[in-house]
Structure formats: C-alpha cells, structure tokens
Image (tube, rainbow, N blue to C red; front, side, top):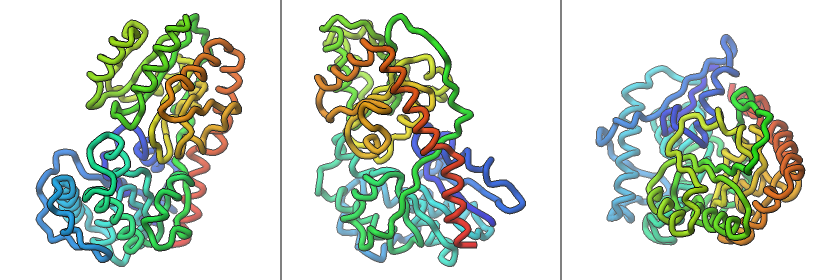
Length: 373
C-alpha cells in the first residue's frame, strides 16, 4: 500500500505532529507498506499563482485581511509545490494540516484523503493577540473546517476536547474520530538522579498562549515562601524578551534559565524533576506525554488535551488557567514532598506508555488505512 503523509512544516520542525510522523516510516515496512513524507520547504514563498476557490464558502468576503491573503498565498504555494514534486499516484493520503488536506484532494481527487486536525490556528492567534474573536480572520479560519469536511474522506483530531471544539464548525461532528499523537519510547530514557534543589522545566514556543507569564508569577510566589528551585525555560519565540524582563521585575531572574531553541530537549529533560506548562489552550499537548515518558512529574492547566492526559493527583497535578497562586501551591507540593513527586512521575510514565506509545498509534492507523486498501 502506497501512503503519503502530507505535512505542512518540514519533518525536522520541533514539537507537535512532527514529533510523531517522521518515526512512522520505521513502522510501515515494505513490501506491504510504502510510506513517503511530503512538506513545503520554508524557502518556497510567493511561487503559486493558481485561482483558489472553496466549495462551502466564498473566501473573497475576507480578502481585505492581510492574514487571509497570506493564508491563500500559502495555499497557492503548497499547490504549486505539490504539482511540481508529486507525480506518482498513492493508494491513500493522510494530511496533517488544513492546507495540506485541501490541496491534496484538489490535486488527487480520486485518492482517499484522511485529514488529521492537530491544533487550532485561529485560537492560537486570538490568544497571542494576532486576531480578534469573531473578526474576519477568525470567521475565515473556522470556515476552513467545513471545507475540510466537504472535501476529505475522513477527519480525525488528537483529543476528545478538540473534537468538541470543532463540532460547531462542521455539519457532522459525530463522524470525526480521535487518534492521539504517538511517541517512540526509544527516544525517552529516564535517568535516576537526585537533585538537591528541585529542577522545574518547561518546553514550548514562547508565545502568550503558553501562559509563561503565569508560571513566572507562580515561581515568584515560591521564592517569596522561601522555596528553593531552578526554572529551566526551553524554547524561543516573540515574547522571550518580555519574559526575561518579567523575571527580572519579579526578582527571580537568577533562578530562571532561558535556553532558547533546542533541537532535542528530550536528551537532557530526564535530569529535571517537574515539567510545568500553564497553557491557555492545548489541542493535545504533546510535550506533556514526552515529559511523562522522561519520568517527570507533570503540572498543567485543566484545559483541552492536557486535562485528558492528566488525572489530578494520580499521574500529575491540574490547576485552573490564569491562576498563579494555584500553580504555586501545586509546585510547592512537589517541591516539599519528593516521594509524592516520584509517585506522580511513575504513574504518569506508565499512563503515557499505555496510551501514547507509537506502537499503539501505528496499530490504530493501520486499522484505518487498511479500510481503503
């Protein structure tokens, strides 16, 4: 069976779906399976010139928005690159970005196209201050979901909560299935260690949606209560300077280490003690599963895919979003009680292995793929 995994970002892009898809090739072996990965190189800009039209809505109603114009041009570029590079037929195409799904069905109308929607671009833009809720861009981007439903043969999400998020924007939400992201356990190797001072770590893109301002305020409260810790922030993004200035103003800059972008954080993540990320929204939250496989205790917000991965007090701790004091209290519990911290980490690791192992996800995908053989 000839499969195409259609990504938007190149496979080496860190985080999210790129944490899973490149590792699938090792599990779909010839002669029964033949898998190819496809994505749009970053250098491809303003190449496409094709006319763009959708069946379920008129995008020209929103064309005065620069964000919509950029989205449409990216669609044209992806279409141009697809026509240029993909010639041979496939038995099945699995797309992992809305533009990829729509373009693949346009280029290969007779090939079954499965669509996995992994995250909400419009929700991220709203939380990061890029667009207004119910504005032109928001309405355009949510209209894309119904177009995906219309064109693609099957739709998936990575969590139940994100499936519920999509429901108002499609005609048949009951037809959407859930297949979580999967992770190759070989990449995550817990390391026995004893840190004299509790080491907190977070890994994410530095944008408002991740709630790192809340984390810094919680850490300031920890320091005010006399608790020793070190906070490691791995990642980069547009608000890094703002976060550094906030850490300084809160008096916790000495306890906080900003690493910037790191390609393989899983290589040294096992040496920390607690993974914490107070996101304001997460469709799935792949980094929580990765941290759990590294045997770190988890602390996250009670929203979206995070709440599906963490059972509060069993395999991690959940706190309300936008609540630095609650987050500080949760972190304090783990700093003061290493035995409890270890128990949560062990339980979290077991849960991640059982539910988010790559082998399990490959099994689920093969069952679906074979329906189209």
